[in-house]
Image 1 (cartoon, rainbow, N blue to C red):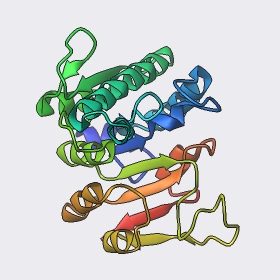
Image 2 (spheres, one colour):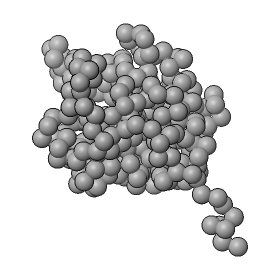
Image 3 (cartoon, one colour):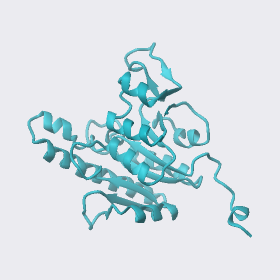
Image 4 (cartoon, rainbow, N blue to C red):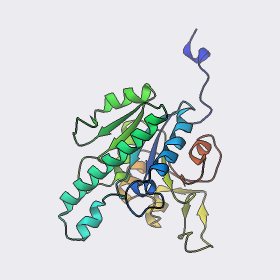
Length: 246
């Protein structure tokens, strides 16, 4: 009997996705570093999607520990500052790995900079195999190159892993024409094109990431990571979000 007759499909339109979150999302109410209860809450959101049978990639920024661009602005040599920022993303990836494995989910931290004692080196075919085995792959150290953000790294890895969408978890439930925290009249977009994001300077991701997603027709879903069950709900066609598309 064929596999399709013995396996029930996951109740979602997505088979494999990339979840991109900022390092600041792990701070909780702290002004710096990691807030373990917040890390565990986000891990529980990932677990709820993992139980649907969805294959999950993750990229986490490092801004809660060190941001290369800020270090450069304060007089540090840019390349050195960016490498320090990459190392911060590895720390965040290890924290998320610990939280996920505490929930019984097998994970792999895969680093673009070799550090074999704590993470696997990035080998595309091996990473794909991990996903096929339902392991969560947390890609760390950006692209391994300075001058590229973790937004670009997430878009690059999403394309390499054949993800069907990038889910960008933020503190608001989509993309607005103005800052909703400052302007109660801010309008949320239901959907927007890649070119509109660039021309209107909507600050979803950096321009390189948006252009890379556009060139490969990879949709970006912007949603609130602070909404309990939001990640799972959107995968099942529910909830509030903005879709960036072609």
